[in-house]
Figure (cartoon, each protein chain N blue to C red):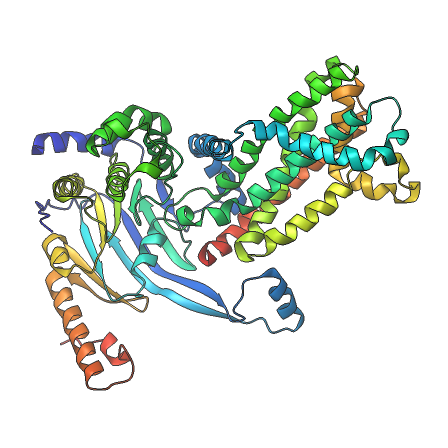
Length: 281
Length: 289
């Protein structure tokens, strides 16, 4: 990733773009495996209904200032995507308070909401509106969006005839449209072929420099250390450590390496519990 | 892009009104969901257009399905039922009686089933982006309205052909149709809240809708039901709607004010109940999708 950024001084007078206070989120798993109404009624009658709450997030607090880029790192299943979804207001927190000031551009699984039967233009309107843009504004902007995605001549073609590269470019162009105050990125920062990849990186840099608060969930630690002002290391729904990007990444790397070593030496558990909270020197 | 243009584009971002989402200061679930639905009405319009296009675009017969579906149903029912019930319905050709009932029931089934499944079918979107969940269910019902209006055309044609004619009271049809849309939306929302949690709720609903449609005098006259049991039919809001619909569409009668009130009040009550149940259930269901 060749993204570069010019760091702006973060204005201290403006309130944080994102605030999380002691956020907890429980996924309720039904122990009696099936989710059918029939089973539910029978279980109720037998008084065997038991739930298990899986705490995907537990006691997470932090804030992001306008113009700040925060990287969220951690192993698979740590709660990183859940965290983004709580901020994107897709998931209501079970406990705690989340405040988001401004429009959110969620780049979480780009193109969810595309309809294969509708044309490119219709999808710009529909997907853009799903992301929270005004349809009238989108109608005016559609030619520019299509041009950016190199799809001007395909605007009247149904999406089912698009290649996956074309879909990615269109989704990216719509998702980064406008001037969001908060950008949530789940891995996808650049899409398409070499030349579009270059342009999409350029656009992300512009969005960041404009003063947008960015939360970047990523496994690409080099990219995180190149871009982020701060890093947050999440595991098992808790913040293990947050602060200076390079320090947090170094500790995370050390923990992951120790985990692999422990696994090789025959330790049974995949991620030893004692490694989750590394001692602070 | 130079830094000047970047700073230039940042200024309107600061002056425009910024929406704030604060999970601790949300209005009550009902106010919130209805408010969000209204705020995002542009999206609702696009969803309705999508649903209409999806229903008819790629099918062989296109919009003609909307006309054909109730006609086919009517044909079958007519063959089976006309010998039984035709003598019991004096004053109007049995075809007209039958079709006017079927138009209502077909709409109700279609609207409730598509609204009930709308959330489950949109999980790919709902779990990634915040979209007012009400908009999916409401758009499904509104899209079914196209079918309802389209199926009025063969009904009116048959009325003319059969010599019944079209009375002036057809201009009052928006009254029973509004009540019907409210009943269907409310029922669809209740079903949608259930379907999010239990995958078999939609199967169950097919049975319940079937029972409801038999409890509505579509193919039989209400008079054949013994007086002591008739209250069951009259408690069914769809019965009131069908009766008012028939009064306006071919009888040319104004209908009693009690029937009009029964239609609108039961419509408003079921819609309100549906929205309340949906808004409350949604918060708990969101994490289960």
